[in-house]
Image (tube, rainbow, N blue to C red; front, side, top):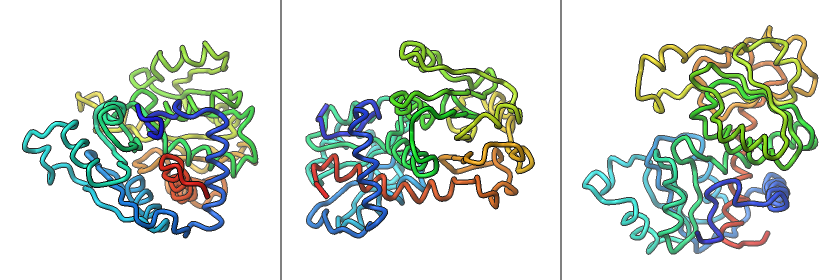
Length: 304
């Protein structure tokens, strides 16, 4: 893999993560820095996206770069049978950086191995979503004032949720305590629990989404049950509305609690939560612009 690429959050050390958060802070102070003039960036989205694609494209535009690419794979030569390898090799002839989302686990790693230019993974199947993790970390740091020794409760689809997988691995540098709230069908995969065990990171699993669990949390990370990951729609129907956060459930929560969600939400956060000062998911999405500006500059080796 080319060292500039960002495929997994594990590609970055603790020091690199902290440096990126500092860069994101600088971009929040001034997001309009024309450091990408003369650069062309491709966004290849083989899977639907709103926030990730638009925030990456906004990041490039505010930095003075140019965007090419697609947001609908049905309009591309992949419908004619072109392989991912050929698409990546062809596009890398034209641009300085590829930002890619794909529905297959491991697609971003493969793309980074065949590409002659850096790849940023904008989500690959149920595997990883490292740029989301950086904006999550930036949101946690901004709201908590630190990353160390936090109680982080993850709720919902922990099996297919690539955002929680990446966040777990990133937070492993900072002595967290995790609470995993999920139905049996959507539990955190064994590989991530083994990862915690090896690093001595404490965690508890819960099937009930109770106020007792909420009241321990510094960060409550809600996730959507992802219909697109299910091959059996009967299984999806069984778990799709299993947990819903209502405003009244937050009455005795910690003053510093902040509620995060990678969005889009469906039914897992009631609208009456939106006006609670502990709701942070829309500000979290805004932080994605600054985090992604920092990532783009890092993979291209641009100092600010």
